[in-house]
Image (cartoon, rainbow over all chains, first blue to last red; front, side):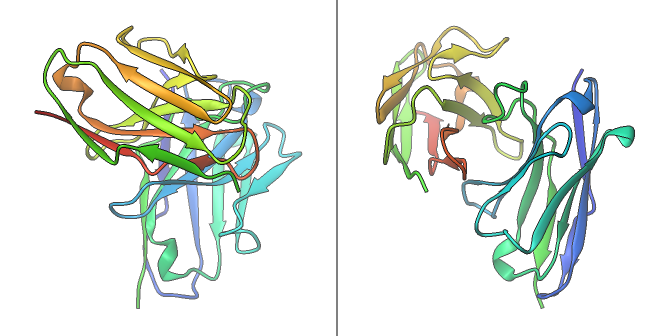
Length: 121
Length: 107
């Protein structure tokens, strides 16, 4: 059974940093691209980042480019999102999700339960 | 960015009814269209990819269709467990974008 478990969220002040983690199990993590997607309270879904299975390529939404960094450690079956210069508009539930295969990096197969990040003074 | 215009914003249906949700894209997206269902307090779940390919375990009363810039999700024989918010998503160009969602309720 595929499981994705996010952690690291919390309440932080504007301008601060936070690092989210996502631990994967139930599939060969090192063979799959991984995404971060977020959802502001009572709002829709926003894709924010993709990392290839081997970290060779990374893509970001303009809203987080230059502030957020996606990374992974295949030896630990773990995906990360380092978030800097946080703003109130970054307040959201953050989900990690896996791409189904190398040829289909564009959609999101399994999703974690999400982790909440609240940016407020 | 490719804009995804989803309609209606909300929908109320009776048990057994057939409903459709539409998704218009601001430019052609080839086959790169997926649909997700999100139940209250839960993560989204993938229903359909490549316009019409049903994920394993998704009931056959769900179907997807469309081409060019117009796509739709049809739910036949509405069931109580179909309540939730439905999102379309394009994967043709970065950044990947979602529709604003359709809230489907039982009448």
